[in-house]
Image (cartoon, rainbow, N blue to C red; front, side, top):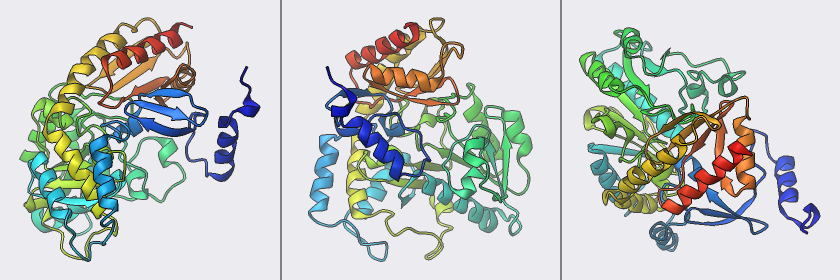
Length: 405
């Protein structure tokens, strides 16, 4: 019989807790290797990954095409800074711009940096193009949003865990209910420069807005001369069964904010994509990043864009997502009270009388499936897009076992 004193996991968990600031509450699992949809811990136990790094691993762990690109670039050049141009930069920007149907791309590193970039660009556009009075620009955002955790971004968060005790807060944001088009339209005034939304709210529990909401936002923004900024950092790049979540309703925003999957689960890569009349407001010295658009990041991200250009992963997400939906909807009334699914992305509301989301994830981990809780009794599933039908069925079966145990 295996006991804790000969396992490596308990000691590794204790060391992590001892030497790390407690800004996360991870499950007590210590991963040492991964391949495709599977993770292996330091004691050799395998887990089906149903989180995929919050969608950063859309193409699975160690996708061979992405790993090959990283290896090849590591042997040549990893960083120049933006003081110089490197030989991967133009190809990345061009191919991503074409995927997005936009003129220009501004590369950064993290999702939060992409959001901050979008905010800065929108404000500058407002002053230079729309004619908003100096320092009066405002941006309309939605309740339940999650755009990152920088001081500016948490200033308009409605999640007290993310916001409390980090003031004073940055002004210039108006918060309206998500999915309420009338409230959004009413919040726009002559100083509004942008509407910033997630087409699907991931951290909130994979909340899909009402049908017609996103087209309505697009129309209002066009009519009122306001930029529509779509935060597709989690929802984009194949996750929902389309290249972008906005595609499901035929909506094209003025600006895409991208990240997570753009780096293939290998390096942090984010980007803002927009047309020249928007991104063109920036001039040298007004925004930048030493590592943004570095050679290694661009080499990997080029291959990510090329994988998406085939359409294979979008189709997999759409088709396998229907299998996931069918399995999860069969558990409503059997421990689940609600299910929201778009592609291979699902939010599950567990009967709070049964257990918390955290407890459900702990029990799933014991059964070899890794997922993440959010907001009490809700958990999220976001498996890699390389998952198989059999693996989806396994995840649903293990969830059913947890709910009925």
